[in-house]
Length: 176
Length: 161
Image 1 (tube, each protein chain N blue to C red):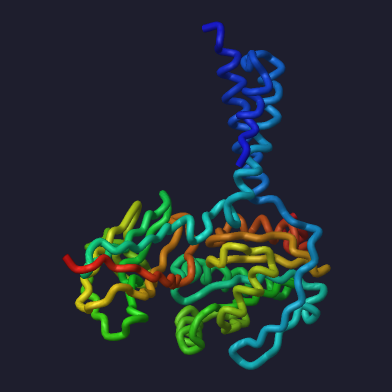
Image 2 (cartoon, rainbow over the protein chains, first blue to last red):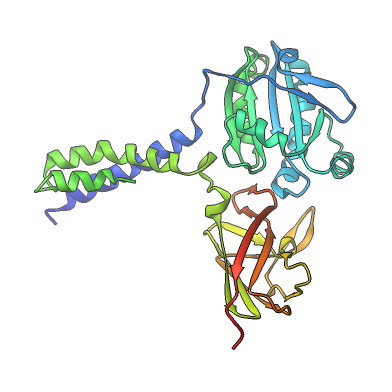
């Protein structure tokens, strides 16, 4: 078994590779300014990036044909209700037919602004750093207007808690 | 992509030496990062790599549409559709095979396909070509869905036997 040190080194190298890949996948792009946007919600209210200066903004792109999107919306609803007063805003741009979005928004009792849109929202997703065009896609924008987190796929309670702990100072203070 | 491990193996005649293993330790994380960048966001595949689609003419009156579905991804049966763009009078006859039953809390019981899907399609028109639009939609099991996709194909049909 004179080769065992090489075997151990190989396993170590592969482990480091896996860890590095995971880290690169989840690292925070904390220095990138968010692109300006102007979105009209289902009530006709306009939402611009500049309107949210000083607040933490979670933009969650979704669609009615996307099962994981629908699954995570109750979590977003709860999170919004718990933390809106502490400075969290959530926007939900939805890529679909307006009537379908309206029906699903009512079914899910979405409490944050929902923005119906077409393929123009894919362009906005691209501007936020998404090159897949798949959903759900979430972006977290700091009170300073920087993109601090991106996530592809359904958000989990643990991930959202970590984001809020890191980026919503009032939350961290409440928990300490 | 050029394999960094391949470079090390060529550069080091005795690649099991300590020096080369040192390089291996440095390169493996780098290679992992490069592989990650080749994929889409969050390590998910771009739609055309998750669902590789091809359509081919088998006979004058028969074509086949095939999907190769990447591991960890699936297609919805109820989202499959074929539309003839030209010649307009061409009629298609096809039946998607039964898929795997999948219970979704919002959509109820749906059928999905993993790994691959082959769809034989019969034509009833006398033509030498077919312009076809194929629609489909799928998701990753890890919780990401791709928008409904549409692909156009022009198929040259063999002469009747």
